[in-house]
Amino acid sequence: MQEIYLDHAATTPVHPEVLKAMLPYYQDVHGNPSSMHRYGQRTRHAVDEARIIIARSLNAEPGEIIFTSGGTEADNMALVGIMEANQAKGKHLITSQIEHHAVLHTCERLESLGYEVTYLPVDETGRVAVEDVEQAIRPETVLISIMFGNNEVGTLQHVGKIGKLAQEKGVYFHTDAVQAFGIEEVDVKRLHIDLLSVSAHKINGPKGIGALYVRRGIKIAPHLYGGNQEKKRRAGTENVPGIAGFARAAELAMETRKERRDHYKMLRSTMLDVWNKQGVDYVINGHPELYMPHVLNVSFPGMKTDAMLMHLDLAGIAAASGSACTSGSLEISHVLRAMNLPEQRLESAIRFSFGYGNTEEQAREAAERIGHILMRSNDKR
Ligand SMILES: *Cc1c(COP(=O)(O)O)cnc(C)c1O
View 1 (cartoon, rainbow, N blue to C red):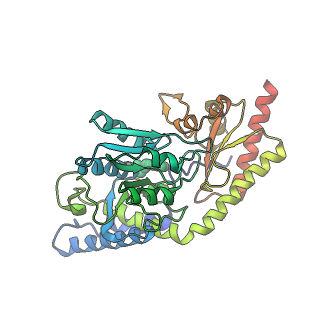
View 2: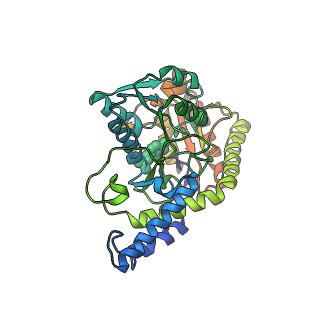
View 3: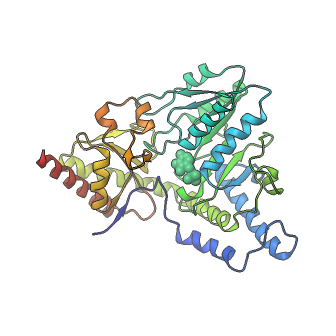
């Protein structure tokens, strides 16, 4: 049985070209970028080049990029760094109920330190209303953090409008673009973004490397203390192989973004076509138009998520509930919960996510296997 990986929103395989770009930095080119000698100069050059590439992919300047250990660290650094540096203005920040836990749990930490957080609701498609953001802004509001595209349901937010609003009100705007980067056009200037998080392992890069974009002139409190790396804001010897791999992954993602979008749309409609032909009962969760094409979240009423995931694994298909699995028992996703969906839809949601290596054949095969799983369980009832 051919295994089919449809969980690219969780993580992606490393592209062969990315691995190739990384290997020299595990072998001969091993100097510390902070060293004066030529070994150091070589890795310093690699880090500088990578920074230029990552900056270009966001329409930012190289000096605005801070390398981190991934999306989680970038989110932590953005929120804590900005709030800490702006205590004189106030201690209030605005976010949404559907953020990744890297943002939500950082907000909880900030609350325990005496900061105040407004968690904005979403509609049934998973969207935050711009008017709600506007109404939540107070004189003491320092930061708005609203994600670019949701990792569980794929819904895109009004990033440009929220960015513009934040700019007009003199509030900083951070967006977690980890899932959108490489899929959507992420232009920090056009969208008025002050801070933005990205991660390599969601775009066929290595795990454990990411970046935070911080617009020039914005002060953030240091996140790690030590050497002078990353302009003293994130100390520690750079992950040179990771940084080189991240840059190559970003290059490939930019070059192929449009074709991949079309490819994912095709994979998506291939699966839906199979289910329509088989008469499968399904509902799509998310926004009907404004979504990232690599994420397909569907509910199969009557088939509980954990049971389905077990059947899928037996059928060789890797998918996800889109929610955190706590000691084996599945919790209802906070994202779907915030979307106020009927209980039956919450209990039966599955996220399929497409990426490098997925073919039309795989999409058809996966959908057929899923259809058979559902038919068998209907027969039993
Ligand atoms: C994966 C993900 C993260 C976390 O990134 P890591 O690099 O795994 O720490 C944060 N936000 C979103 C939206 C994600 O999909």
